[in-house]
Image 1 (tube, rainbow, N blue to C red):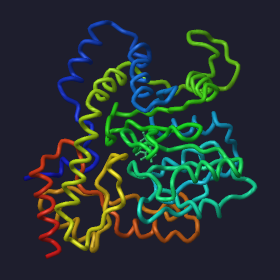
Image 2: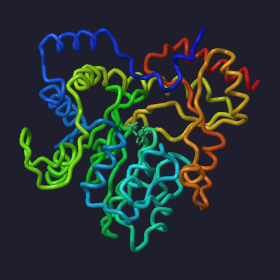
Image 3: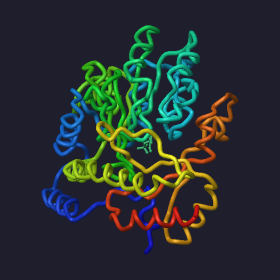
Length: 365
Ligand SMILES: Cc1ncc(COP(=O)(O)O)c(C=O)c1O
């Protein structure tokens, strides 16, 4: 059995539905650049997440950048970010001169640690950019982050790139509690348009600014009047055609991701060298199967020999050469040493999951 194809980054799973839809669209002689299919895709995401507005852009990094700019964050402002996340989170504000300030994460969820965030606030802090790690909710409660931001006059933004299908206990979709939230549709995400991102927000002014920012600063569609500086971060109809088909598959994938997580947890429950994070399946959808393991390197090698691909989780960002900053980050350091993504794609069969777990048990026996 070869499971290398089922390493976490193999999610998109385009099928005949996408092929038919693209063929139909190409037969219509449409616009190619964003138009009605894009609006349909935005409406689908807004409806699913319960957000008032959804603005799609060309990836989930630029969506973070535009969200931060539209929120009024400027060069020199400090933005608090978790030290465990994909590097796009800090890079998205670094690109225009804002300063990412790293704080450690909770051991149970890998979401930002509330106390560490409080301690990192200075006169220059403008915002908290919260990340729902693997769609998880912070143990401290998201309402505590809202309270902190309200008390300190900070903007709360959510990097919900890994969150489609994950909700807060209140029933609100992740990404909809702060001023705005950012989603990603890159290849490994629960739905994908190849590349793609979106900002969801309930704030009319944010939505207006974001639409302008992604379209050269145009004051309206189809004119060349520019009240402000803007850029070109527009979507394409072809991506939207695929996105609309992917959205139809989302409910099934959400269920399947939860089943896969349950199966892994159940089959590995007696393996003390493998530990899972707190995933509340009532509200949240595990995007990847992320675990901490003993003897990671040898386990990976053993699984590879058995045809099973795995991937090391994000290293602590402060230790990346790109940042190389000092600080005490016990939890993200431990993830850097022990964190491992197991095969996680929604199309994995129960037999394949059993096979992976048997090999893990064999390795530790
Ligand atoms: C937390 C987080 N933020 C941002 C991104 C960047 O998204 P994209 O690859 O669409 O630019 C990712 C991608 O994996 C992510 O996981």
